Amino acid sequence: MTTRRHPRRILLIKPSSLGDVIHALPVVSVLHDHWPEAEIRWLIHPSWRSLVEVHPAVSDTILFPRDRFRGPSGWLRSLAWLRLLRGWQPDLAIDLQGLMRSALFARISGAGRIIGLSDAREGSRFLYHETALVNRDDHAVNRYLGVLDQLGIPRPESPEFQLPQGTLPHGFDATRPYIVLHPYARGEGKNLNESQIRAFIRGTGTQRVMIVGRGKSPSDLPSHVEDWSNRTDLLELLGILRGASFIVSSDSGPMHLAAALHADRTVAIHRWSDPLKVGPYFPNSLIWKEGRIARVSDLDDSWRAEGRAPTESEMEELGRRIEGKRMNYEV
Image (cartoon, rainbow, N blue to C red; front, side):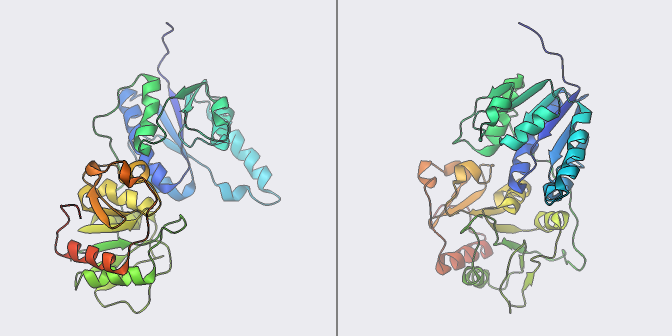
């Protein structure tokens, strides 16, 4: 059997989205622990660069500014970017995005060894040198960690999600306790509407509530509610989440930030998405679906099916339970 030499340069390809970037963090930590002398560069969308640029395992980033490649002159800019990608010449490229485009990036990089996942799409597997066998029904974190099996590296007992400290936006008062509500999401039908948001606020009584994220929030909110929607960058959002006493979020990237920071103080609201695949990773996080709340450790296959939106009364009850610190049992 041929013994492979340790890679000196590793390219990790995971441009987006926010939640997926967070799910990939344990992989880069393990690679660094196993090969501390290796230089690891992360190919990432500029929107998420602040999450990984200060990570102790990441030597540098290769930014993928997809929007700049559009329009009549976009192809010229893309050629310059591809030359930059090709110039570094990694020994190993790991594609966790699993699309034809990301597999092409791995090929163009000139890496001598390219590894992807068996559930990759768009025919991208044909561009890999090796494929790590993964279960498509498993959680995203475990699927990404599957590349370690292919590399002969033991999986960690407890995956690490090392995140920046974050900052607080100007004028934010962190001296008093607060609950965070993140009601927005990109996926269709995942957002909480105005009536659901107001119902949750009613349930929290006079507790201080912060609404965060990017979306349209209700007007004329009560005095104990502060609307920080559309007013924070990623590091400021991280700073607000880090200081929260409890967090309720739609199934979204910020939800994964919250769960990585405060696993046992985060409730993820799922509708049609499968919490066993894309929900919070840690066993002590909480899931709301179909009127039920349970710890991740207590979920079974009955939680995979498509669900429904919470009713106003359910959102109000959720607010009451958080206000009363009664979140340690299933309903």
